[in-house]
Length: 241
Length: 214
Image: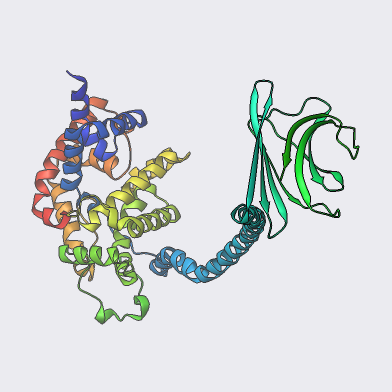
C-alpha cells in the first residue's frame, strides 16, 4: 500500500466529512498538491450534489426570509446610506491634510524661491558687472606651493568692482587676506577675503567714498587683530590702473 | 408541514408575478446570472426558494433552530458575496449552497461543547425524518425542488438498511467514522466500507438527476 492509497480510500469519507479532525487536516493539506484527488473529490461532490436534498425541508418561521434578506442587503444599504457621509468626512480630512501639507509645501517653496531669487539677483548683478566691465586686471600670486591670482573686473556704469581671489590656501593662523583700494588720498581698507585652495573668494565692492578717483588695489596678509588704516603685512598683489 | 416560505411577497412583488420555480435547472442558472449582476430581487427569490431546504439540512445536523438560522444566514451571505467567484461555472446553485451550509453546520457541530448530547438526540429523532416516508401534504409536490427530494429518497431506499444508517449519521448527522462505529457498536473498518459502498451506489442512483446538479 502506498501512502497515496490512503487518500484514494478516504476520498468518500472526506466528502462525507466522516474523517477525524486530524485526518481531515491531512487530506485538506494533500488536496492542493494532488491533481488526481482534487479532480476525484470534485467529481464526488458533483455526483452527490443532490444528496442533501434528502433532508426534509423545514418551513421558516414567519418573517425569517425577510430577516435574512434584510441582514444581507442591509450591510450594503447601510454602506450606501453611510457612503456620502463617509465620503464627506473623508473629503474634509483629506482637504485639511492636503491644506496643511500644501501650506507647509508653499512655505518651503517660498523660502527656496526667495533664496533662488537672491542668488539670481546676485548672479545678474555679477554678470552685469562682468558684461559691462571695461577693464579686467589679473595678477598672479605665489604662496609656497600654491599658485593663485587676483582678478578685478571694473564696471564703470555701476562704479563697482567684482573681485575674485583664487588658488590660494587659507590665510595663515591669526591672519587675514586684506583687500585695499589705492586712492589719490592714500590706501583705503576694504574687505577681508576668505578662501582656501579649493574655494575662491568673491566680492563685489562699491568704490570708497573718498575724494578723487581710485587708482589701483592691493592684497596683503594682515594680522587678524590689526585694523590699522594702513597695510603693514606682506603684500601679495599690487594693481595700478 | 407547509413548505412555502413567508407569505409576504418580496419587494412588493406579487406571488402571481414571481418567476417560475427557481430551483429548476434553468431557474438556478437564471438566478445565478442575476446574482452575479447584483440583482437584489434574485437574492430574495433565492432565499424564498432555498431557505426551507437549507434549514431542513442544517437543523437536522445541529438540532438547534437558532443556530440553524445563523448558518443559513452565513450561507446566503457567502452566496451573495462570492457568487461571481464560484469555481465551476457549470455547477448549479443549489448543490453549492447546500454544500456550504452542510460544511458550516458540521464545523459548528464539531466546535460545540455539547455536541454529543445533541447528536444523540439527533439520532433518536432521525436527522432525515422518516427516511422512506417523507412528509406528505397538499402542497409538497408543487414545492420547488420537491422532485429532487423524492428522487434522492428513492436513491436512498435502494441502499441496505445498515448502509442507510451509516450515510444518515455521517452525511446528515456530521459524525466521524469513529463516532459512528461507537454509536453502532461496529468496527471502524466496517463503517468505512459501508460508507464507501453506499456512496458508490448513490452516485449511480442519483445519476438520473445529475442535470439538476450541473
